[in-house]
Length: 324
Image (tube, one colour):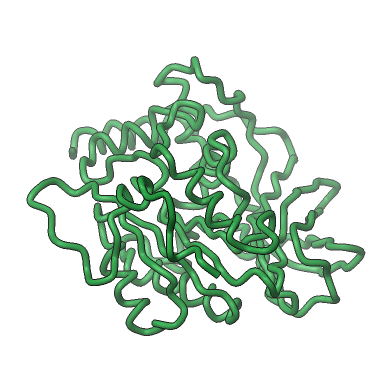
């Protein structure tokens, strides 16, 4: 494992020196935002634009490694003014020391559903989406990504590194049946196209685009993708403490959408059963059910009371958790 780490470190240094950049061009990323109809949360980042070949299913491992490592090398635009546009409203913002920016503010009335948002700076633009959750949509879902929807083999670190860095979104393997299951959850709402679905990943935001590409390629319903903000200054989200990271994110969602009960979907490869049991203990009236994919090697520990094996859920013809 140490030898592999040194090999990856050497490649990343080489990549940093050779990766081409577009002179004076900015890349503005807007991460999916959401609103309860009164207050919105939108986040993004502005960095130097770098060229990258489009993803192809036939790409080889070296091509994938080069592209994936390239996501981690950014010349951040520090202290750069920009404007966020939404339905005729404009908010001025300034990026921080690592190029990140965020907006958490009341907004004028917006129709429920998905809205296009745009950020611009120095003649460059970035596009994104904002979900305004309809009041009548009362059933949501918060789902883990790795080994829950996307086969990553987190419990086998060499396999995890290979899946993450040597494959691209067109080559990653989906957990069978999960996209259709999430569509069933969305359909339990009066307005399925604007269901409060959240994809909660422990991956860094540098991999956000690839995860979003994977979800779209495998026909997962539209949702808000949340990834970790990893910062060189030690701020942002905790790098290794998944319990704290996921608990904070889930509690933030619950606070912003008080009228929604959530299904929690995860796996037993790391801490999802314990995290979800803790959330259910704190907010029992807000948890509609907990579904866990079993990926840990035998002998497996029993799931906490009330949690269901995802395999049983996928095989079920009816789900009481989806009843109105």
